[in-house]
Length: 335
Image (cartoon, rainbow, N blue to C red; front, side, top):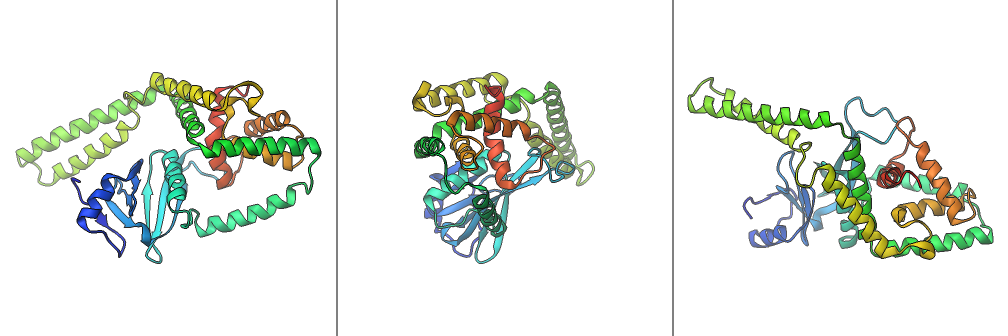
């Protein structure tokens, strides 16, 4: 352990136990989950703080919007955060680059510490209210055909939830490919310009420091260089962040999911749409009486997803579901 993470909670770990726990923790973006502590990031440094798991009272996701990007409508331009509440009201908010990293951390956390809430208090109230609204719109009894379709979808959903890896991998790969396909090449040139400016600021800062020119100006230049490097590095193509690599990962994820669920009539949806959220939304469609068979429910779901765009207002739970599965449908052109 090169850097010892700073203790945030009142309860801490012995240096030896802390070093071992951090070394073996599961990493999710800039944060990590160990057997004894949750490791959190600052704006620039990953896993530089820690809170013991026994001190954590609540951990949840918060999605903010960039300035001018949120008007109460749409599901894009999001900035994801992980929020950790501990020690009876203290709170630490951690910024993430990719929302799927927050989702994976919370999914893993739900398995290792199912006793800790993973929604904010407001989120729990909204979920309870949503459950009441949904109960009111569902049919009390389904027709035999719809009930059979529901049971088939529930069995398929449970099968995917037993081994969520293949379906979650495809969802992540589809989202990455969709983002890559929609990115303008001009962004890459802008990122390159930013990195070059960062390198120039760094070089001049070093020169000013060596020649004692300008007093504290080199500190400003070092800061500018760091900002430029960090902002540009996220957009520049790398061995994993380029169109060919993203496409290969998407194709490999499709193949892995096909091997897991099979093709043809063995599964109630095409393998390229095999995700628990897809099946859960189809079950809701059946319970609402908008479809009677699995095929009809899938077509209704496609229509629902097509209707969701930047002009449609959505709740947080709807947002989470749509951004997870819609790229899968867009890449397949809703076939």
